[in-house]
Image 1 (spheres, each protein chain N blue to C red):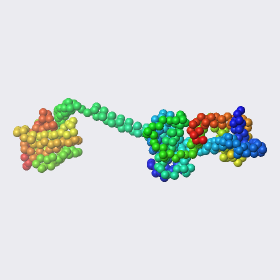
Image 2: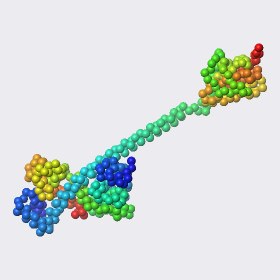
Image 3: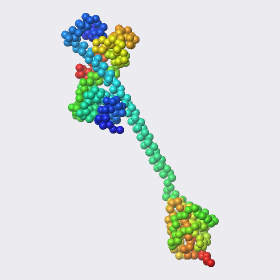
Image 4: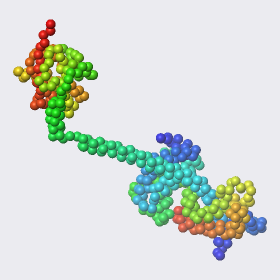
Length: 196
Length: 236
């Protein structure tokens, strides 16, 4: 089955998994070649492809992809950008080879911080993820009307204590520890410092 | 505890909304007047916004991951199917080749089979007259005469026929094609040489066009020839 450019965009917007599968089948080999062109074993083609496609899908859904280039060109640019970010985050610097693709096509996404934070979040302790999520009101849409929020939609520690079945002070301390860990992880990541 | 840690806790309490109005107002003023404190506050708010955005990112990433996993599984499955199909084809090919090798006779075996078959079968061909042959062989005729109903079996050696008979030559050959040869014995002249194709194991010959005398006949091998005699019967 083949999809046209328009069908790809439409499928992404409509959450059609067949389009995602098609994109993998069609473009994975090209992206893997791109990743190998960096000649760096730290870059995993599977991860880069998944990250790149995730960003591309999000940007399409958020209306940030205007179809000025072919979808593959766009995906390729994003993956190339991710490779550079990954290498920077590992070493602060990376060797540049002559055959590394031109970076002119990269549409710098303002969401780099989000993607980076998303990856860091995945590596965090689930208990920390849970309390930070709860504090920031994530996954609480169904009860937001029933709970007290502080400034900037921060859920009060008192409410967090009720939801998690712990004392408010306990919730405060746990959240504080987890935020410290998060800050440490972010600060130790050069890519995050570049972004801020 | 450092001043920054104090400030972080203070900001957290402010965001929690648990401070009294006076302290809250002080903090709001400090955000406007103290750049270091304002930066700390903005970082916290920015981090929260980025964290909240990761929720959407995680959902999309999870969907992309599961779709890729499904496609990989499907590709793996298709590869397995192709592999099995290719293996079956290869096995059939190898099996056919081996079967061919095992069943194919060497030229020496063919020659031996030919000699044995001809000599044995011809010796065995004897029997009474048959009426009503179920099939006809290729209707070769002598001098334009068509082969008629059969009444005789393959001739035993030195069998005598008359000009009203149709001779049925019977044999069994190991070959897909055989040549039946009939000669006039007195001058060794060729009366008939006919190619009898695969599946045909007899040949009908009407005698009315032949002259009287002794004939020899054989299939393929002249060394295994036999004789029959033809005589006229006067019609009244």
